[in-house]
Length: 600
Image (cartoon, rainbow, N blue to C red):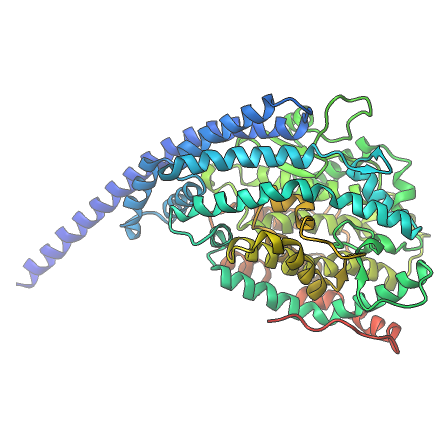
């Protein structure tokens, strides 16, 4: 009897094993065929998008038509009913599949939800609307006193202009684009929500969050918790900045909240330009260099870590520098990195000029490029050639940007000398006015606004009202004067239109980058986190490669624990800026605090 039972069990196991192998083989064939077609269509779409971003000609619709057609072809395939049904069918028995097959099939369904052909008319309309919105956004003619200006020129004016009336003109000019983009944003909100509902998502914000394995409510709770954790330091920075800028602009009465046009950034997302650290004036040093030097120096850094030189196609195909003044077309001036074909065609779109901001940006964008290169390997299927999550990609880029700005690193490459002395507290303050100040903007204003926009279906007449409510609550920033409902100041931020419902990526990336930096500093370099030199460290290069090379084949939560020893947390960033908190409390003695803790 026992032998008979054993035989039955053996037969069952053989049949089960055969069934698993058969299903795995079926999944392999489907995924291989899907990936081959997807890569081709993805490449055509990327090339069309590239041209639309690098060759903007007023009145010429040829690029937008080509981009729309390429995107429609990709959408038709990735959202194809047969692909959806096959993926769903295979996932019904996911326990029999290999883990990497499960991940790819889930990716197929995620991509399908953005383009389901069950609502093909809506998808086509959305693609058309997105293309038109991009052209309006990057083709907009910014104007001050009747003269056209570029976004680079606007940014420079806000960094350096000391006359309040001129600052006001510049800031207001930077917001005019929002009025033109508002109708398109309302339309896109509807089309994006209707698209993803076809595969069961409540709204577009919920859909984007799902890539983290989280719900909309969970990401809101997480971002609010992060804002709460960094609030004690942000309140000190906000108080310090109000008093310092009031003195700078000759205003006797210190305002309770920061007027938006006082700040050195169009959106108030980064205030570090208000601080100049003695002995570390990189702008004056870098102005003697060329933009090409910045790019090559960025590459030299990555090579020093043991990584390869950038492929020739990067230098051939990228658009790295500002257009000549005589150019008859415009381009998107917002820095970005592109993995065009999910294989070897990697490019960057920038407008590099020799200054400190672009020096850091170069290192950041090359971080994305090297991430692409690292996970383009045989162990990572094309569908999983992504970051461990979207924030990881930004974290790695920002991490290398931070590393490139630290004093020992800058000495290593000869931008300052051993004799250069700096005020370490001022240096830390400058960093905080970048990294800490960014979090209430990204994890607060942008995330809450897009949640309200998509999940709560915010009334268009309330767009600007809600925007400035959030700006005041999270950032303590107010407009120079009342901004009516005809404005849409949120839409002046490019991501609202063309990278929607993902801005929490950047907030989480800053938290993650400081966890990585803390680990590298203390465990690999054995250096003070405030004064590290990554340059030339092959061990750092190996550590970074171990994070980048798996792409999206691993669970990001487990990878985070493995590489840092802890879950995602603001502990590391607050530890880094702990000396500054005490310094600012002393500076702010007797000053009025006006910010209230954010909701949790």
